[in-house]
Image (tube, rainbow, N blue to C red):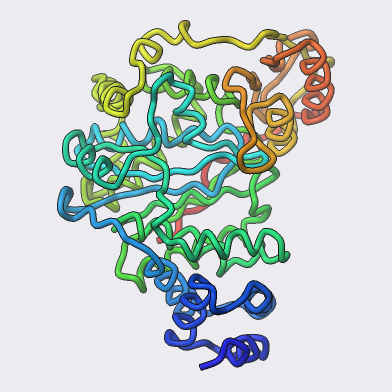
Length: 434
């Protein structure tokens, strides 16, 4: 078997066998297939696509390129969630303890933020002492003990994905839906997930800008799960405007804490409940979405979800006193409230511009390894469809300097658009794919 023959077959629109895909992935991971041939192969996939079976075989080849985590020794069914990224998406911080409080263990491996999307690990590291570098042994022990883990992914899981991801970034093949789907699912399956809820974002602040693109990606991932003998469901949810109010690490942690304690923005809570419903049903903890929502609301109201969050923070070395009294968190040097320059109905709050502005303030990173400032960020006080009076507070900037705040103010005002006529609120979830 030769790499060039496999490239030519896919270039000409052929369907690759499992053996051909295994050969190519293994060869590239080990180094016997060079970058230039792997680049040609990923471009052929971008141009000609892959069938669900090919994509599943690619996913499993990447899973088998390294170690896999078997959670069945500590939990009967491992449920995980994945979000395709967004602005202000701190959903995991609420959903994980909420699902665990309903009796369903959750062991989650998350990533860091890159570009305009925030990273769950960066948010949790806002809590002094919180460790995100658990070993596999520590991960399993904590899942067994408290039924709740939130850690970073180890390099030994799906190493082929890391190599292909780096190559796609510089070869113009990031946008291939089969490659995106296999990248996401290989990490989830390697980490031991048997049931996966996928939160696929669409809109101005998402990688998928249209519902059609998002549906194709969601369907691919659900198909992979089923062909790989896993369970999956996908929500296609809105990311035209930031999710909730807070954008920025400490600000988002505070908002998640407020939500778990019975406060927080209603739109953000609703989204958390939508995701929780799917996880509880997929994990056989509830028969219907209605029953799942009742369970989740009870866990919020009786404080058990909050108690699970405290347990999580303590188990991973975080200073619980900051979580119990969020006033202890440090604040940005400059906090500036900006009033609305006009009256009307908000017709757009451009999520990508908000996310990019937060990165410019220091809340995110343009490339791996960039330092981040946990204190800076933005509070977007209104939502699309809201009526706003001139002079009313529109957003709050948390910046390291007055100059940075002034620069952010101009960009954020440009991200807001007004209408003289009433504007409908944006939907939370467009559709659910099983």
